Image (cartoon, rainbow, N blue to C red; front, side):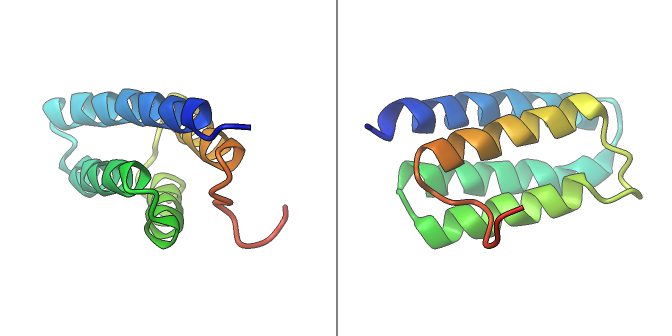
Length: 99
């Protein structure tokens, strides 16, 4: 199976998440700025097929999004999961242990 379709899907989901995070920034939620930066780096890692960078960035993005202090909406969390699932389908193995 080609990794192109799941990789393209991951990037589309990432674009949607990035747009949602930027909308939060526009609403004055400055705490979302580091998440936008993580999205930019993750996109570059996906484009470069850089396995270690993808794992690091998706883990960091997930950790920050799931931080209760941030209070991320279920929509943002769902978009993150769509990215992670697409990356797994592309063979990037975003989790170091099976859950």
